[in-house]
Image (cartoon, rainbow, N blue to C red):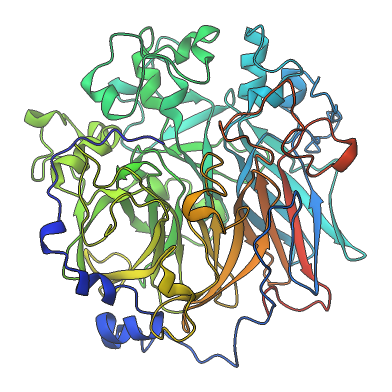
Length: 625
């Protein structure tokens, strides 16, 4: 986990008292009355009855996916399956003996964020999904031994994004192959650059002197869908792919560059050696936009949204039709951002909105101790964002978004990950997964928004903008402090209550208004200490109106549960299972890859594989009902 924020932004712990933090655990109804007042009243719509209709599943340590009675789970699209590019469908090899060229036509490794794009309503559509990183111990037949250029190319081919076509027939979902929509985006795919950093001097390299075309996207984590039908993917821990050697600058250090990367790409691909190509380092850390419905389109890195360790990006729409994009950085003590587009969303889909995300205003969040907050503009020439302070122009502001946020005094958060926007109230939710460094010697202490020292369990924060999504002020509170014993006491009215969980990560609202929470407990602490009774990672449903949380799904050994996409009728749920079998060292042992998991292939498996799980209710009803 990255922790490179050494800014001097003031801590709020001196004015964040225990009574205040107790108020911040109120359930949605009580919190809205106490903090938001009438703002939510006009937005809330009556509901016919309880949203949670399933029986909670218990914690599990089994090497399988478990769902409630009355539900069925089906596995599709595991790592290594051909995506379905016509005329180019190399099959999966159980020993992972496929080549780098073959991998570039197959499902990538370690599935993450996922979105569903209808082609025929809720029975046929496209799935776009991220592949966050690779485990070289499983990716290559002999693991990390005899490191080579071919292994680097194969690792790069297993990163990125997949677009596949899926359809339902006879109660089952399957990949449609071949498909004219099938496509892979890897660490070698050309991406255009849009926005204020396009062509900037800090984006130019020997291979791209114009600074407008970047090869590849990597460490893609969460995802969002735009109202005009495109896919937004966040480039997260990209800094770990570069070698910095012994000449790391202060700016590079602020982004987490280290002498040697764990990926070892720089040994055989010199563009990942920051000593030789320092500007290549600036060309990652962006939100990328992909049009799944146009297989001939060029993906774009949207620099107006700022450079960061982006978990993902999620879109709201203002009353006058402008796009507002929320994002967070999955790194200790980093920031939450939003971007407000200059122009309105135009009718006509992706083709009519090709430059919408290239023009607008980027903001970073400050959470004050009184339950109020402010969006601070990252605008060149305003406040400290001047040439005298190292920001020569608008392009340099977005390239150095962290440094700009440091200067503005934004609130340093406990790893802000996924966001979700309540379609009924407009309330924005964000998971703060954990931060064991909070309050450690030399690190920031607690503040109102991050109220626990050594925060091993994480929490979920939420806010309501003042009037509309483009507002510069907001009211905030906490949905839940994960792991708090009060959450499990049925009599503890006012608290979010229900099944135990920690390290909240994935977050999504379904079409019925249920908030779904996914967990990412690290394999290094899973089943230990506070997590001894949590079992494997899981997915839970929360009725934000009542505060009730129920466990809906548990995953196989060592996995992360991540990514969730519903069909429009809410009757099919796609969920990704990432890195099953991950060891406590966070990498797999190539000498015994089946020691921890054989999911999803079972006894015949030669290695575990990330995959997508399709969940349906046996009576055909909406998921969770």
